[in-house]
Length: 296
Image (cartoon, rainbow, N blue to C red; front, side, top):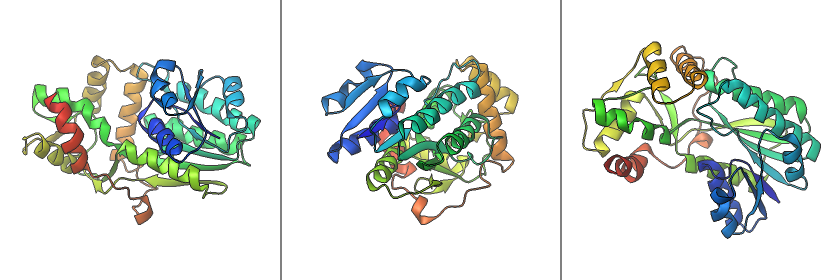
């Protein structure tokens, strides 16, 4: 039996579907039965509860061969790091108490450092699992920048004719990955149980791209080949994110994430290897998803 946290999200849902297709018993965790209904219809069993509730998680994890563990986004969190740590601690406690032998987590590039803003809580998550569940086999999927993040810039592109928002310099090569590829990687490792101890791998997309290069690809897909990437100042980026509805703590975390990128901290533990490369290209995403959303 496998347990999938965040099963209504992009990577969790994808991993759950892959496991169900492989004929495995799957328990999907979420806060809304309605959002899990599609997976239940395909044979999953739903467990409705809060990921910060260690007792609920322990009961749900009991008997599991493997767990896919993640901390869902929370754009309105009053203290985003505290929110991350509450869930990370509950998951780590439940893994220990339930005796889960295999865990795959959704982590991020930059999780080797506590100084990476919104990613810093994933550093804490990795450390919590190492401390609380040292006997479990844990594989952290340190994912690159999500392609889907660019969908949030469509309003900016339409309104101002520029791509931007994150105050990341235009010339820094960054791994950019589709969430489907992350979910596939999680399912593949859970099915193979091919990891021991506590380790990490990068899930890095088809290639590393600068934001200027990524913007050119997106611009071509929507008929705007001259679309520029504009690096906002940290202050302007923070104010723009807050005005768009992000909580102040989350906005500050993204600014710190961007600063860590520009200063070389975020990417200091990463170098592309063949085994980190995943199939979906940004060009494919731009044509099949970004352009459709832009026109819609």
